[in-house]
Length: 169
Length: 169
DNA sequence: TATTGTTATACTCTATAACTATA
DNA sequence: TATAGTTATAGAGTATAACAATA
Image 1 (cartoon, rainbow over the protein chains, first blue to last red):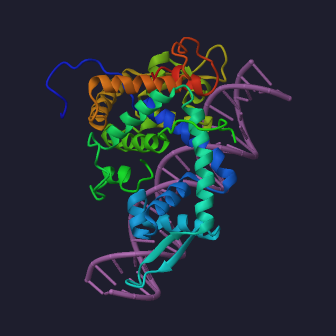
Image 2: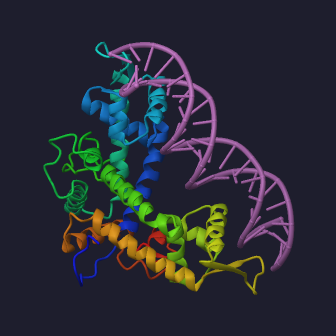
Image 3: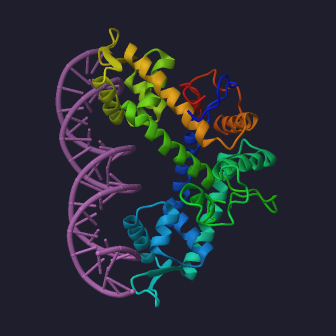
């Protein structure tokens, strides 16, 4: 319905390929993160927290596009390993301010190193320039063609998740 | 540790972006498939079956990279809607030969139409040439740089899944 | 009364183990 | 004995509902 009037040039479908590669990347990421006691979700949460320098749980849930109840469990894991700290907000005592600990910063750095190696492995068939091209295309899709959309945070929903929290850019 | 000796040119990381876009595509696909009574898994199975003109459940499980036990449930769904048929192989009566029904072929066509619209929507920020470029890059990653790898089926594991069953190419 | 975080709970997806029927 | 398919079941991941503390 939103598609143009008549004959389009035949376009290859990327969907299945995209999902397949994302899955391969995820499986490999899980493998290398496991020895660090982390799961992909943990890593994303840590990344957002580092980028923001602290966040409420609600804001975190929104950025991660997760249900708030699941954020609780996620943070429980991280807190148990002393990678984050929760403290009550003095302004609104209902809120928890979540922040990285020093150990959290270090663990995150280790994980990022491991993940960079995974990506080199999975995307090994692409040269440097090709990888940059891929990155550019993916980003263009994610931002809906609006390159500089990362400035304003709350563009709502999808766009926000891709840019707002920095972790995806 | 596995990383090269010294300074590489800084490369943007595509992993998170890739996963994010795959998720968006999957969520939208689920929405449009739901009215057809299908889930993404069903569609992939139907696609493989059409491409092969029939398959044993074991071969199907291998191609879909799913556990065999889950294939049973998947086929039960499809059989309940009369989109596929199971019949015993005359050669080896332990095996089931699974084939699309006429209704299955039609339902698959409807679903593909809906999915093409979804992809147009999600990848809307890309022009025709850009989409082809993206497709080429993704395929290169999937096949490990071996473009013509689709000829031989059993290249083993990952590569096979991307090419063997046709659905991803 | 509404909101933040929490707990308990249910539902889906996926994987493991045991069973059957065939080989 | 081994294999194809099936069933039952347990473990993750995710979402809904009710509750406590606070606003």
